[in-house]
Amino acid sequence: MFKQFFSSAPELKSAREIALMREAGKIVAEALRKCRELAKPGVRTIEIDRAVEALYSHYGVTPLFKGYPGANPKVPFPACTCLSINEQIVHGVPSNRELRDGDLLKVDTACKLNGWCADAAVTLMIGNVRPERKRLVEAGEQVLKIAIEEMPKRRWWSEIASRMQRYAEDLGYSVVEQYVGHGIGRIMHENPQVPNYVSRSVKELRKTDFRLEPGLVLAVEPMLNMGKSDTRTLNDHWTVVTKDGLPSVHVEHTLALTAEGVIIVTADG
Image (cartoon, rainbow, N blue to C red; front, top):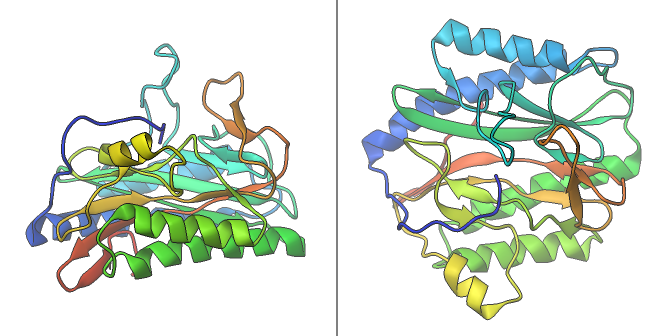
């Protein structure tokens, strides 16, 4: 999501509400599984989006991306999925572009079921992917795993974000700072914003840091670049790419913190 500040405190969820979000999360997981099955060389990204739209229609859920307002109010997002290839980081618009052997495809999607939302993303390796790209994907997945494992152990989000950032940077990758994760519940984007890095500004850190407590539900979505962290947005008003043209990865789960540990709301199965 776009980096921004929220004015209200995070809304903690009950066990019942988390269970309802989990039902939405199962459908998001099924959508991502469908995308994984379809994502082969020669397949057009619009075909993948149409399959997800058909799946959401089958279940009678609301696709949360389609029609979402952007920086330009005249150009809402046109699809149910964000499909971003290689140097495209996030918010890629599905099109007639065909996937090629060696591509990295970032798939991000979200839906609402019975008033509750779930949001997740994966990076898919298309065909035979070069080793350096595979290592980047594995690093992104590990950064998300760090967040999942550390959430029950820490008091403040900044403690987790610093570990995520350090792991990525120790491998020589950069962490995207212009786009961050978010709270989620009855609407897709709730307080708090969830950065995957620690701000260098003490003032900004105090504004964005938050306490970890049971009932907190977050869409955690690290984005790692092979090169520098700088981004730009294409003329379609949505697709965000790396300025240096090097590949990027994006992974995401909706995570609920409970007294017993973390529930992966968007887990498959």
